[in-house]
Amino acid sequence: MTNVIIGLLLIASFIFMVWYCMKGYNLMVGFFIMASIWVILVLIGNAIEPTAVLKGKSVIDVLTFVYADGPAAYAQSILVNIFFGAFFGRVLIDTGIAATLIRKVVELGGDMPRLTMSLLCIVTAVIFMSMTGIGPVISIAVIVLPILFSLGISAPVALFAFMGSIMAGIFCNTVNFIQYHTMYAGFVKSAASYSYNDYFRIGLIGMIVGLVVVLTIANLTMHSGTSHNWAVNAQQASGKENAPWYSWIAVVLPVLGVVLLKLPIIFGFIASAVYAMLTTGKLRGSYKEVTRRFAKLFTDGSIDVAPMIGFLLSLAMFNNAATYAAPYFTALIGNIIPTNHLVLALVFALLVPLGFFRGPMNWVGSGAAIFAVVLAANPGIPVQFMYPLTAATTIFPQHLDVTQSWVAWGFGYTKVASKDYLKRSLPAGWICGAIMCVIIYFMYGNL
Image 1 (cartoon, rainbow, N blue to C red):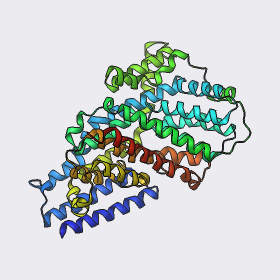
Image 2 (tube, helix red, strand yellow):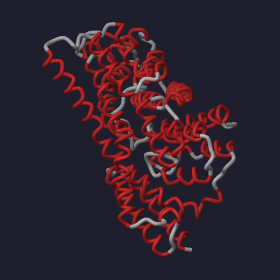
Image 3 (tube, rainbow, N blue to C red):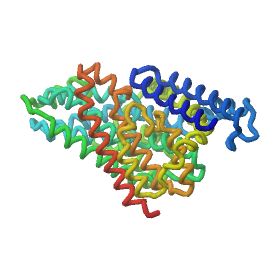
Image 4 (tube, rainbow, N blue to C red):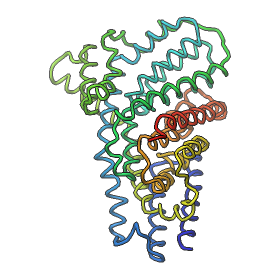
């Protein structure tokens, strides 16, 4: 009976967290509060009726695991990758490579709005296979969005298409893979050997699916207007000359280094950044000038991701608290968790919308405890099958969501009403996630 009562209180806290997220309150503080509530409920429940997961553990052990071990382990595994990924994003912006690619795409598309929008979305997705952070997003957005507006594309369609292309790229993003995989491996230690190379094929398929769905919805809801050739104006707006053509490959060099040469991702970011700066003349000058430039780029990149880092550290506390809370969820819903691979894929496809608003199908929402229960009910499930399912219900909704920081920024920049955006983003996220769940089953469901 105690387990059921504690489980119901934990579910009530879920509802609170969904409300908290929808109100737009600070997520870093929110997940710290949630972790603390769960620790208190778990300790109370264990005092009344001990659970196996807390056997032999003192209150200090629990507090240490949640508030110290969680953030420390997370920092060791991914935070450095995030900092260097943000640094590389700043390099692509400072060297003008990202802006040059966008301008060349506009020149190629000419006065054809649909073609230009499609090409811009594809290039944006490719760029965000490596870039991360709100700073790079905004830096690209202030170039891409005015171009789309000038082509007569309405603001809601332009904002949706741009954010959707970022979402597609993020599904194959090296840094984001490390982020979500680390959360998964926190519950399944054997999954630690699953690498980006193992994930790359399904990640690339997910990126393509995301682009196809986003561009289809954007084109179906788009009303053509007066179009203009924006190539010259875009170049003037950026204030930079075109980066040389041989520097453009820097955008995908980190991914190629990991996939083809199996390079460590941090080395890939550093080597790609040096190549980008060398080929664009950013390594000219005295030693002091060059090192100062490197330091500034790393500092600017760190600032870009600082809010994310705080959020992820508090999320790590919540994830560790979810480890102790799992038995209570199992007591309530453990008997209804599917173990058949086909049923799991279909259930995940059906529940993709619960990944919106940081919901219970979202790793960076309240999904950690739910996934912990699912994984506990399926101890032998292959990571090649299960991890992509959790990524599909997280990444597609999360990066189209109104709670995403750069989407919220986009509302202010474009003056688009959230309802005009959501009527495109909600179905897009669900369709992308559902399609990927089916693809994942056919690719890995028989493992």
